[in-house]
Image 1: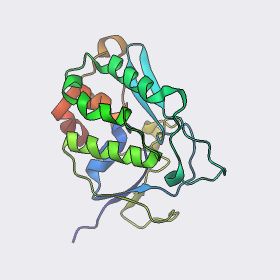
Image 2: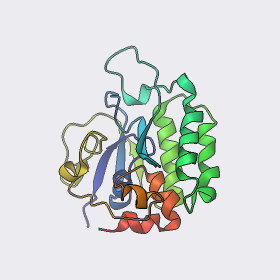
Image 3: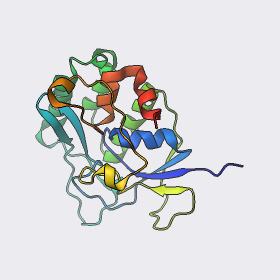
Length: 212
């Protein structure tokens, strides 16, 4: 019997393409909910392509009472009208892509409804994106914070990170070029948020994710 391949990932807001290649490639994925929340990670930020280059969008969070607050307890802040700002940024960045019109009504409700916890928001968004791409990962949240991993288990919790170069830390991931609406101006931008792939490539996103 084939050994099950298991990946451990952090929770992520509209995660990068690299993250979704793991959801496709691994038999089972555990999303970590007991890690200490750290800012400036994909837990609360994504990177999209704007006409002038990469643009990071960050969800404001309520400052926890303790320094070591687990991810599962992190609340979303209403500060700064972020839902409106994020949706406007996404719309202006992707309005001219081939598939934005097709998918926008799936995404818009996430910027109208208020979620209390960041992990719930990320999880529901991720589930919807998987459905749109037509991938069916087996995803569970962790029941404890693991430090040691068995053969067949891979820990990407701190590997997939906006401050780390995927070329150095994740040799499994080789970004596959695909059409990007600003490519003639900016060149190809690898490993942006999954929505960049989805809005540019639509149903072909699955083929791009599956290439090795």
